[in-house]
Length: 224
Length: 224
DNA sequence: ATAATCAATATTGGATCCAAAATATGGAGC
DNA sequence: GCTCCATATTTTGGATCCAATATTGATTAT
Image (cartoon, each protein chain N blue to C red):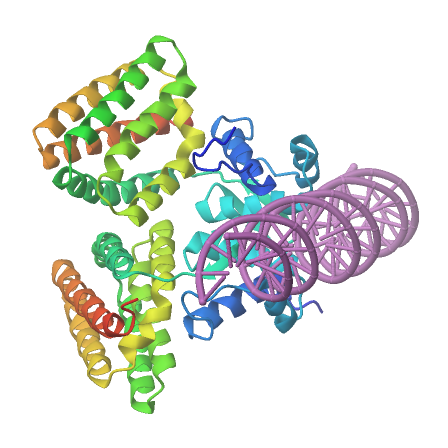
C-alpha cells in the first residue's frame, strides 16, 4: 500500500529559507543594497540563523547577495557595468546553448515551447506581470535544456537569477511586454525551420534592447 | 610599530577551512566520490561543524562538491561528459576574455605575464608539479584579468576550480608539462603582437589536448 | 539461505548560547 | 561647532547540544 511515487519529503529549513529569500529578492521586497539582518529574517521565517546563513552562502555563490566577513550580507547591487557584463556573458553562453538545442530539437520539444509561449501570452493578457516574467523564463529555459548541456543551462539560470531583481523594470512597460511576445513568436517560427543562427540573432537583439531599457530606467534615479 | 599597510586581518574559521578543503580536493587528498565526514574534518581542522558547513556550501556553489539533504556532501565526481562540458564552457568564456584582454593589454601587464611564466618554468625545472600547476593558473588568470570583466574572470576561475582535482592527471606527465611551457611561450609572443585570434586558437588547442589527455587517463580500460 | 523487519548506531539538520567584531552613542577637549 | 576617543549596543562568527534522518547490523519468519 506504499504509494510508489517518489516519496516527496518535506523541505529542510534551509531549502525553505532559500526559496523564500530568492523570492524576496526577485520580487523586490528586499532591494539591491539592502543589508540582510539575519536575526530579523530568521524570526520572520521562524527558523534559527544557522539554516538562514547556509541559504545565504548559496545565494552568495549565485551572485544574488554579497558577503564581507564580520559585516554580513547585502542584496547585490548591480552597477550598469555589472549589468552589461552579465548580459555579455549570457550572450556567449546562450548562443551556444541555442545552437546545440536546435541540433537536438524534436517535435515534442517544440510543442513544449509553444505551450510555454501560450502561458506567456495568457499572463500578458491577464496583466499579470510577475507571471509573465516567470513564463518567459520557462520559455527560454525550455529551449536551452534541449542542448543537453546541464551545467551550461545551470550557469545560464544562475545568470538570470542574478538580474531578476531588475527584470520587473523591463516588464513594467507595456511596449516591452508586447515586444517580448512578438520576439517569442519569431523565435518559434525560426525554430520550426531549424535556423539556429537566426534565433541567436533574435535573442541577441532582445538582450541588447533589454539592457538598454533597464539602463534607461536605472540611470536617472541613482546618480549618487 | 605601526605597519600602516592594509591591515591584514586573521581569516575567519570558515575562510581558513574553505582554503584547506579546496587544497585537499585539488591535491587529491579528498578524492572524487569520497563522502565528506563533517565531524572528522572539523576535528582535523580544529573548528566546529558550523564554519565547515558554510565552507561546504560555498564549494557546492562552485561545483567542487555535491550535496543531498540528510546525506551530506561528496567530492564531485565528474563524468567524461561533465568534463567535456566544463571545457566547452571555458572555451566560450575564455575566448571572449582573451579578446577583451588584448584590447587593453599594456606593457606592464605583459611584464606580469612574463614573470608568471618564469615561475612556471622555474617550478617545472625544480620538478614541483603542484607549484607548476598553480603558476600556470596565475599565468592564465593574469591574462584574463586584463579584460576588466571581473564577473567573467570569476566564472572562469570557478570552472578551473571545478576540474582542479583532475589537473594533476595532466601535469603528472612530463610531455604535457613541456607542452605547456611551449604553448605559454607562443602565447606570450602572440600577445606582444596583439594577435588575439591567434591566442584564442592556441588556448583552444591546448584545452582540446588537455581534455583528451585527461580522458585517456580516466578511461584506460575502454579501448577494446 | 534469503528477505523483511526492527533495533542500534552514525551522521546530518537545527536551536541556543557565548565570543568577537563592527557600529552607534555620548562625552571631553579644543 | 568639530574631532577624537572611550563605551554601550548591535550584529555577525563559532561552539555545543539536541533532534531528525539515514545507515548498519542483528533477528526472525519464510
